[in-house]
Length: 228
Image 1 (cartoon, rainbow, N blue to C red):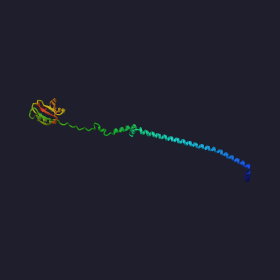
Image 2: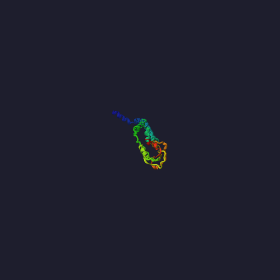
Image 3: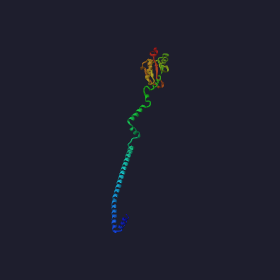
Image 4: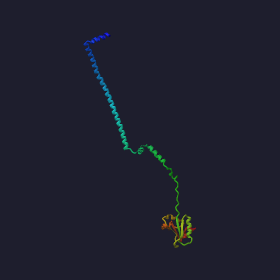
């Protein structure tokens, strides 16, 4: 081995051998230099491919973000300018079954809905009409006739507030003078005395504060009180 090394060193001292060795070394260096760009180009291609993929991902992400924001903006505009009030929206969005249920509950729970039945209505107190107020005047001159007729009328619920003689004793038929416009109620007086309704005359005089004036005539014997 040492002989081979010594021999090689001696051979390198020769100028021709050095040229050959140098030329071999130079060829090896150039060949390695030529191969290097091939590997460099492959690295550049791989890096450029990764960059393209990253760029595409960024574009897709930006597009998705813009689409999402546009949907939110459209919903905001629609809700702000075209939607009804919250109360109406809530009522419109309620299911039909729920609205029907609420309406039925309102009908069932209406206050005192069953109290209006005819059986539950309390009968109103009937106010009896005010008794008729009359005055009795003796128009025939028979003594005590006005007192007798007064007692009879009071027994039948007619309020006699005054009795006296008429301005003369020439009245032939007993008659009833209406002092107010309640002639229908005066029919009951005519029935009590037994005289025809046609003898009710209207001569209003509100200052007397009476319903009627009864003038007893010469036919007093035909009156119902005197038939007993």
